[in-house]
Image (cartoon, rainbow, N blue to C red; front, side):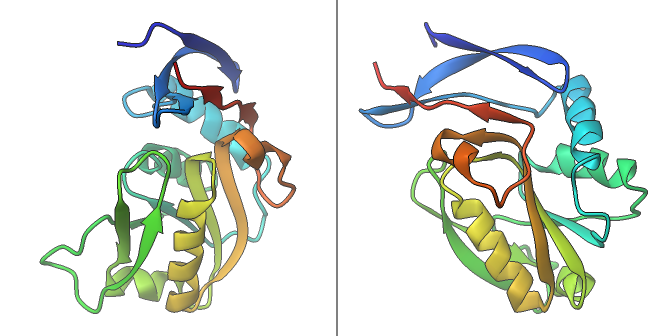
Length: 183
């Protein structure tokens, strides 16, 4: 159980985030939107004001970005959004996949798109979406999937830019989130 916390206000919502060690030197504030519909909706409403107007499709990675993508798509009047899955499912046909390394996932993870979703991205302006951008590993994997599908990435958006990601000018985010020394 965490004994340190980071107080965050984002999109008018205040949350106290547990600070958790991810390595023997690095700790992060655990930002979990899953199960927090008020936070997810408030963040989607704020992000909707910032994303490129010519966005055709929102692409997110399984799992934590899903409720945010659903609310953002609804805010933007979109009928669908696309989710890159962490494994190829039996019902998928003509799936494409890439490998991803993230500081919050142990080891290498795979992200894949069903052939139907590949068709949804082909020739479209795609906004990549996640809850947090830190190292950019997930965004790199989503970019590769979009390009493989024949789509064009027109933006990368998240709720929080963690660590050095907050210095980037090529991403859309609502608030910065610091990194911490492990204890």
